[in-house]
Amino acid sequence: MAKVKVTQVRGRSGATKRQIATLEALGIKKIHHSVEVELTPVIKGMIEKVRHLVVIEEI
Image (cartoon, rainbow, N blue to C red):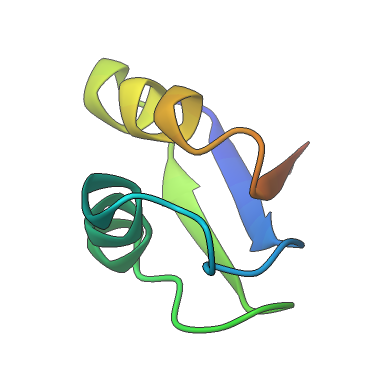
């Protein structure tokens, strides 16, 4: 599997509780915080739900 770096670039205010929970499940704690994750179908779906809040970079 490929690894990706997910960085939060927009704030959580205005996001739904479900989107905030998705960010927390990804391990993202605050704005400009990055995590490296394996790109599995589950992670891909989570990123898709919060794509307006994050930036994705391939590693």
